[in-house]
Image (tube, rainbow, N blue to C red; front, side, top):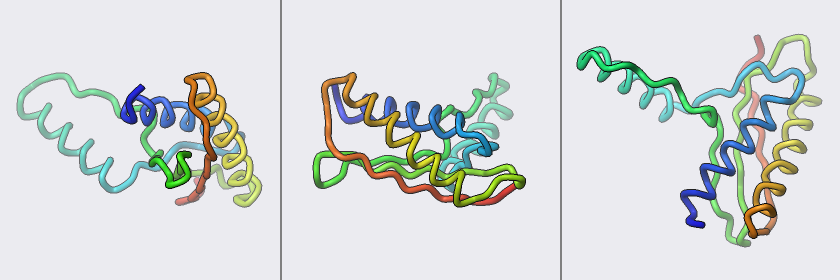
Length: 122
């Protein structure tokens, strides 16, 4: 598999795991992702084409680490009635397990480091 294919699979595994944690309302797109979505909507409005929905993995960034593993960043929006520290800890654990399982299924291994950023609570 190429790194691009691995990255998309890592993103999807991480997004699904994060969104399954109680207290997570949504994933927060980065500024780059928001600008790309806005440009896409504008293009579709001008050309009359149907706009596409944002990818499921918005709010997830990943990169290969120097130890042949993965570094995954998850940007979350939480429900206000949940403790931020508890939810962030659960997101980190669930995403780490999900990405490790995905990599193992595809014949690769290595350490997975997960950074969780809580951007706001609703």
